[in-house]
Length: 178
Ligand SMILES: [Zn+2]
Image (cartoon, rainbow, N blue to C red; front, side):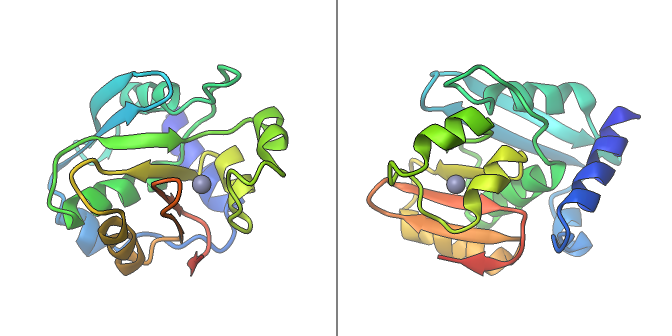
C-alpha cells in the first residue's frame, strides 16, 4: 500500500501538522472529489481521490502530475492531507468548481529562482511547497477574501493572503496566517 506509507511519511515529516477533524471529513461523504485548473499549463483535472474508505493511488498520481513544478516538469507526491483540506475548503465555499492553481509543487531549483523575486514572501511557505504540502489557489466565482476567510476557519494549517497576485496560499503545516 504505497499510498498509505506515503501518508505516514507526510505525517512523520510534517512535525506539528494537525490532523483534520474526522467529523468534518465525514461530512464530505463516502467519496471525496476535487477539480483543478492549472493556470500555467492549461491542464484540467476532475478526480475522486478518496473512495471506499481510502485514498485512490491512481487519482493521487493524477493530482501529482497536474500540480507538478511546471517550470522544470518535476513531480512530487502531494500530501493527501492537503487534498482533504482543499475538499473541505471547496465544501465550505459551497461550490463544485475547480481550484485555479497558481503554484503547487516547487522544486528546489524553482524555489531558488523565485526567492528574492518577491513573488512569494510568506514566511516558511517555500519549504512546504517543496514538500508537496502547500498550494496557491483561487476560485473564479468567489471573492479572494472569502476564500481566505473560509481557509482560516478550517484551521488546517497556514493561510497566506496575496490580493495583489490574486491567490490564497494554503498548507498543512502549522496553523498560522500572513
Ligand atoms: Zn504558496
